[in-house]
Structures are given as structure tokens and as C-alpha cells.
Image 1 (cartoon, rainbow, N blue to C red):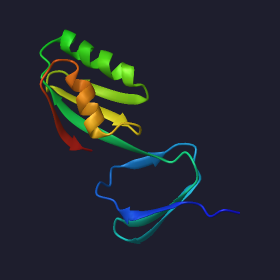
Image 2 (cartoon, rainbow, N blue to C red; image 1 turned 90 degrees about the vertical axis):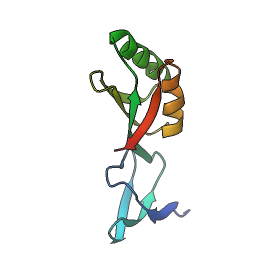
Image 3 (cartoon, rainbow, N blue to C red; image 1 turned 180 degrees about the vertical axis):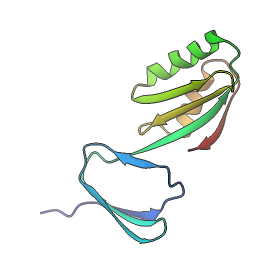
Image 4 (cartoon, rainbow, N blue to C red; image 1 turned 30 degrees about the vertical axis):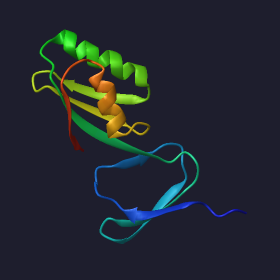
Length: 113
């Protein structure tokens, strides 16, 4: 029987979580130093926060339109504060940034939550 793959490293964000139909367990050696043993289907889910210069409902609809084309993302739009939080396991922050730029609005990556 083949050995299960392993990932070793340090986690920089304690809010990153893993989900999916997986068989996995984590061995902690010290704070945020870990080894993950997993089988297929393991996905890291991150929340990325962006500033999008939205001024009206039409602007937020443009955000909805471009994000809906990505598939497999969940998002929250905070129009008064001009923020969009996107939860995804399939897309990097850079990919999400480029997608949001397709709205024609000024966009900045603020943080990984």
C-alpha cells in the first residue's frame, strides 16, 4: 500500500481552515508548526478581504456578476464600507483581485482573514 502524501510547514494564519471529503489529521509539534496527513480532496479555504470602490447597488451587482463566473466562491459585500470578503479554496488572492478588477472599479487586497 502506498504511503499517504504529507505536507509539512508553518501556518501563518490561524483562521485558514481545511474542508472537503477528506481523511486527514494534524500533528502539532509546537504552536503553528504542523504536519498534515491527508488523502485526496484536501482543500485550504481562505477568506480574502478587498477594498472595491463601490458607490451604488449597480457597483455591487458588478461584483456579484464577476464573482458568479468563478464558481465555488462565497462572498459578502459591504457596500457602505466598500469591502468584499471572498471565501475560496480554489482561487488565490491574486486571481480574486484580477477578477474583481473586471468590474472597472479601483480594487485593493486588504488582508487574508
